[in-house]
Length: 221
Image (cartoon, rainbow, N blue to C red; front, side, top):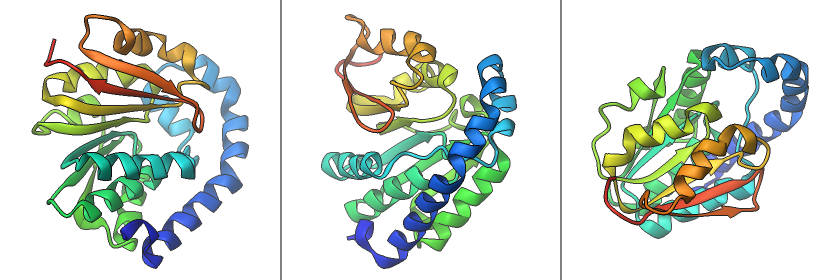
């Protein structure tokens, strides 16, 4: 099983440890500016050295969701240094059905690092990390999309979801991260996926910094 493969776990262990070492320092130093900024490119540059990863338990959940649903096309908004991408790619590889992760990252240095970490873990053939604005880089992703992870800048969760809505199959899963720590900035997104009539069924999960797990219940609205 790839998720317990020594080559993969060595990379994940190192990245998680590095994130634990540096992230609090980087985020705390940037906090005053973060509260005043709204531009995603400025935010990405400000936190260009911060990992901002999913915790291990969320990574394990992502792996389980991809394996359990036999997801073939997985889309990720917000690769950062590739920790979550590694969990997703490991699941796609273990699924054995020719699946692929298509991920996007605004910060060019992080996108390059994520590609390197996937290659180091032996998972480069199962994931593609695209650099740039997600509303552009994901424009040509062919559906049906089986699972979507939203883990980039919160103000873009809803625009990214709307841009991909027609390509999400009925029964597809959407995982939105950081819903507790950044709930105020996600109010529009959460209202949208929870509103009757929008074609979703959604519930919060108390894991990591808060997750919203959503399924596409009806065809594109």
